[in-house]
Amino acid sequence: MSTEKTQRRIPNMIFSEITKLRKTLILYAPLFLWIGVIFYLSSPEGSFGQTSRFIGPLLDFFFPGMLPETRITVHAFVRKAAHFTEYAVLAFLAVRAFAVSTLHLLREKLFLFALILVALIASLDEFNQSFEASRSGSIWDVLLDISGGLVMTVTLWLFRRRFLPVADR
Image (cartoon, rainbow, N blue to C red; front, side, top):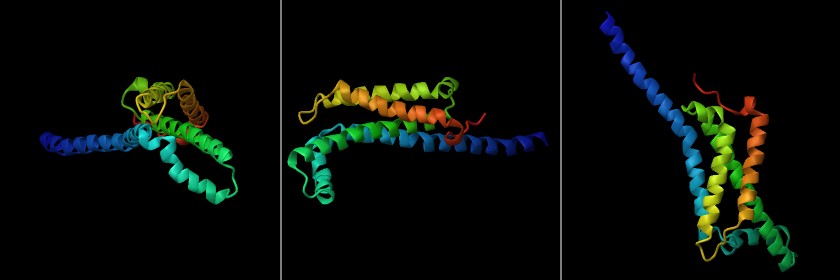
């Protein structure tokens, strides 16, 4: 009788482990994919000249009489807003993943680790850009990126009970 119970428990244990692995992948995959997007955008494909191919026509459509100098300024503002936003998204995905981590310390200090990840990726991103002829690395962009991550992290901290998944205990 006890061997029969053991035989039934083993498939349940395997199913439980597969479920935990699936849940972890679902939470961490978007984080790693977003980091990939960030590094793709730090390539020449994310340069001012490349983004003007789609930002320029949008500006022309919405503001047909815009002066060229104003257009350049607005384009630069849109790019800086994108920096802020992409790192806010990174912080959101990091907090979301770290909230259900199997590592107690990561789960306990998830907001701190999310900010550390944002600062690390922002620094690596700007360092990578410093090697591209069409790009330039800037400490100001790192600070802008970190501020996007900080705003999202503080927002999530303030509303943590509503937006964060509960870890299985």
